Image 1 (cartoon, rainbow, N blue to C red):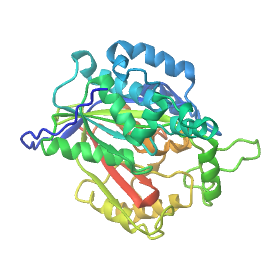
Image 2 (image 1 turned 180 degrees about the vertical axis):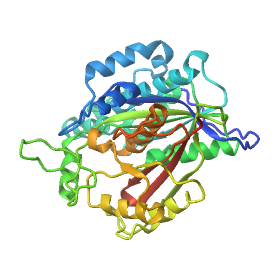
Image 3 (image 1 turned 120 degrees about the vertical axis):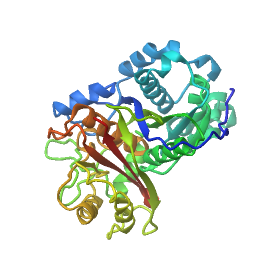
Image 4 (image 1 turned 30 degrees about the horizontal axis):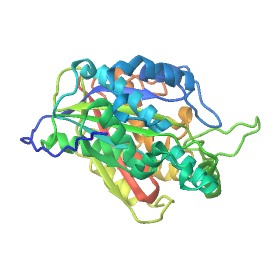
Length: 386
């Protein structure tokens, strides 16, 4: 497999970074617009979010002529790679970059929490049962490359150089956006494709989250649901999905602008949120030189950390911004959650309406928050350039 690393440095630029294209595939919808319509109709997933095999296959067939699976040789792409490739092609098509062919100065930024974990678990199962002879080349490739396998596969299939792979738990996707934005502003690339994907639906992870007390318990009707900002923090259910955005240093009327992004971390606890929200508050304060956001798309995953997050928002911005979390409809997509949230925030700007149905001005602003285990935190703003 031929992989091109990205290392060329161009002249630094001073333009704004704008979103040129969006891609999104979740169990709720196979495109960004499908997801927007489903949330507008108040459709909510329950129990666990699985993208239907038929829908994934249809999207793959639609874009197959645009990517080179032959470059993946005999690889049987893990489900997370398939989801990532679909989202990437959607974003490239939306930006008009897919038809034009790869741009030499387009860099690839990928985020995930675990990479091709389903293939890795299958390889470990075969290794226990049959020894090394039971693990074929495809499974060995997935295990060997780990989280970077997504970026390597996308690089080969789309002929794009890899800039970086971000593994920052559930904040990794917005960390990748932050790195892409800085790379564009510092002249490392002229265009950026940011992709985040996760497919971690497996009993081992559901049981782990259950042991941590953050997996939602079945309600009276037997279904698990996610209720962000609930007083007791009832928990979440796991959902798979992928999102992608195309970024470029331009600023024209009608475009969505990323003016500021921020990443940080706190060392309070490996899995728990800092009860004082000190690092999150610091990150939010870095946006205080900009006008107050019209809405904040919170990380809020239905855990006790939601109210801590809400208190930090209140301390920094007061009561003005509307606050919501897409996990109410989608559940938690783990390593892909941050970019899925940012894509839905972008759709709010484009439709001039929040996920709750409240109207937005043509010049609206927003902040999207991503938080993850290990104290990872990432924030990204959007501005409608109406």
